[in-house]
Amino acid sequence: MRPIWSGAISFGLVTVMCKVWPATESHDVAFRQIHLADGGRVRVRKVCELDGQEVSAAEIGRGYETATAVIPITDQDLDAMPVATARTIELAGFLPAASIDPVQIGTAYYLSPDGPTAQKPYVLLRKALERSSRVAVARYSMRNRERLGLLRVVGDVIALHQMRWPDEIRAADAVPAPAAVDVTNEEIDAAVELAAALSSGGFELAQQRDAYRDAVEEVIAAKEAGHRIEPAAEPLTAGKVVDLMAALKQSVQDAQAARSENVAPADVHDLPTGKKAAKKAAKRTPAKSVPGATKKAVTKRKPRSA
Image 1 (cartoon, helix red, strand yellow):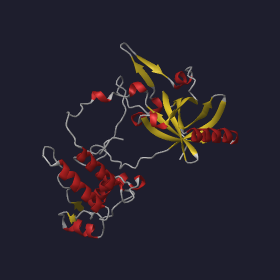
Image 2 (spheres, one colour):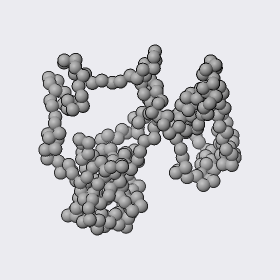
Image 3 (cartoon, one colour):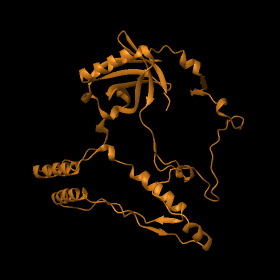
Image 4 (cartoon, helix red, strand yellow):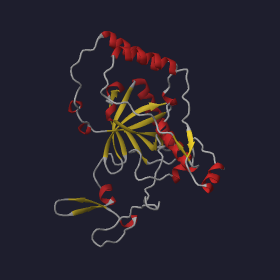
């Protein structure tokens, strides 16, 4: 893993040289686009619309399109801008963590001190954040734009969370609200009891897995070995009127029972194949997860957006 940015944290007259590291990683299954007729790889080529020639990455720059022209913007133009946060994470203020709307929080990074002289001011800032029980709101520039950030303590390091600007948050009242309905105290109590049942048994966020990714890897491994997986059950449909209290009580019972049960694996069946294909498939056994399968997997589109 490599740092993606280096600069300084500006804390009043105190400067902390630091490096920024990615705090997350993607485990999505990567698909390729193919030609359905023959399975050939479909590639995207960048072509100049004026001369029709394919261009390489070294020949591509950036430009801003106006009503009359496209204005070229170079890296030198951006580096020369008079922005104080170009190489600095500038602390603007401190707030209680509970006052930050989670909708505003985005990508996370870790900050590390850069060099021996940065060790003490880094630890000082970390301990100040811990003792104040607050988070720091900062401004910094990364990837060709100034951003709003949030600094908080995670273990022995400081985390930087990219934040959306206030004017980028859409008002919740733009979404249709539910109709005015009466909810009884008994129904609320039953819903709270269901929440307690789902939380019992030592629920841990760290144990949660991406079931969709696991299922995709099973499909890849099964098809590679000449098998198929039975289709999933039909999804629930809206419109069915139910007794809400009865549904809540049954859900509580189901949640309590599910804590001690294991879900059985999906049934796998042979696909109809010829003699040669059958002999080849008989020598191979589908695995639940294939580490290299993501390089071979192909489809017309991505299963989800990143």
